[in-house]
Length: 402
Image (tube, rainbow, N blue to C red; front, top):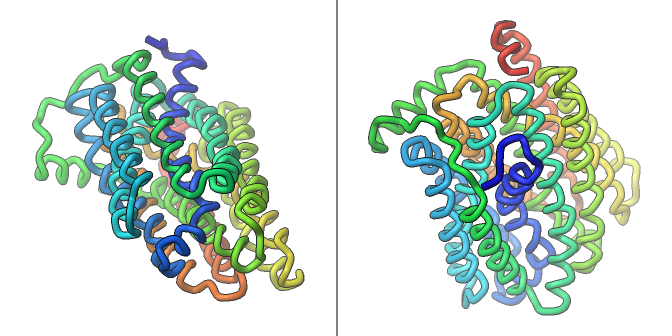
């Protein structure tokens, strides 16, 4: 078993967390071809992303209370088995409807890996230390969006779109075996009550009554919604509007992925010194700056300029790397005895709003990237607003959070 405060445990948790973004990023270059293969519209293909988020949101609501009751390790292993089974169905899906349904089931499994990895962090660490751990995990996890589209583009070019889901199946089996072999049980005291709908509603209600939690959840939801607006529309913008091939799209996607890696690395270096709150402030400023820069570049640049979208999104994702892990740490800090349930809510709330944003942006796309620019600017501004409101949280809580 891996011990706490070791890079090996951090890397395993990061890899488990990366299952979620990898399940999206690996097949992004294939979205237009999936539509052509099944002879359906881009809006219909986008439902494979939206269904993923719906299943992901539902899973996150369920796994937290279950892990508080039955332990992190057992529930995590069940989730990985579900992920692997769904990935197999995705690989052989004969229609777009079955692919959409399988994506929902796949995300239900992936949700367990992410919720429980965060809960394990809260079991072992708190405050700025948890923020640093989540940032280090985020930096490792950022390899998924960096490598994912490139590997996905290569797989698509060589073997077709189904190969992306076959690769996810192999990744799921590998990580599941590692978790079974090396992941320790970190839950010290299991929740005494049985997991029922009534008990879940009571637990979630008590968490949602905390103003500090709601503000951190708002920060996390806003910055993530801007990211998903980009993820859901990037392949259509860069391939259909700007004419890139799947492999060229994967390369053009790299700067925004490197931006997130840069942001999480910076956060891991400064959060212990500046604290969660000030780190979020710098990140929120970068988020808004990325959105405003995209509005300006789309106004000034020619319609054929891919950089007018890609470079501003890189600034946005730098802000995301600074903001997202610290918002998670801030939201988890008040709940050492309910880390699973709090982690579930911190996952569900962003996913809910991201579904709406993704569908809306893709539906509004025509021949320009303006819907994306407006969405990421609005989410950057909203993140900054939530951060300003969080400054009114009592100083004692700020101290607890970093």
